[in-house]
Length: 258
Image (cartoon, rainbow, N blue to C red; front, side, top):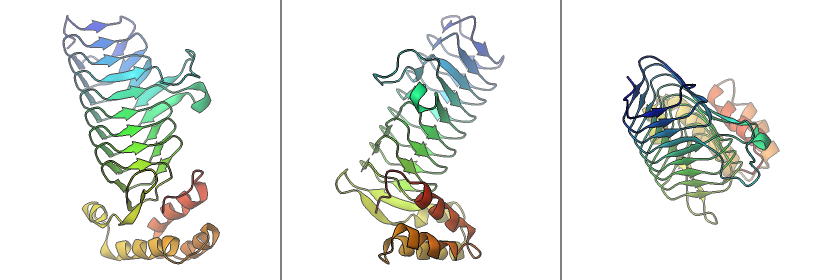
């Protein structure tokens, strides 16, 4: 049901059972899937496609233009999956032409108050963004990452799956999967494996021990990246989860946080 006090462009494509509360504003290039709820005073604009069963709370800003001086009105977009929750005052921007033209958010993410996700970010699934977490442009976040409050992530950074970012971290390098990271820009470092998180996701103890061994190969043996990859590859038959470590080491462009 669309409240008559909402401002909804006639060109917008909104599923019949979407609820739109008073004073929400929805632009002409917006598409919203079944079962979604749009809170009062939320603004959804740009070429934005939103999947099913999303909740967008009051005063959220979804699909605004990038905060990028190089952006000059190019036809870029924002794509959001299913089952996400966007809390009050969060800001999500469309992509830029130079960054691939799209910002993407997956499924079942919790995005708390005042979170900012900038242009061209690629966000996975089942991620928790605590209050005031901020991503600069072109950040990639793999599945099941948890952000502490006020976490800040620089452009072109990648965060590996199941990693945990401590509150107030200021991050400028890629973060390995399965780890805990914390600290300011000059002091940020890893604090070991995210063992509690892995257990909450039902990783077997045998697998956790293998991941500890892999962590030590990367960070405790004084190996080069190439040497570490070679040693990690021997572990794959016994622990396929090690592959995520290998992939990050091979693909990292900003360098790995240690």
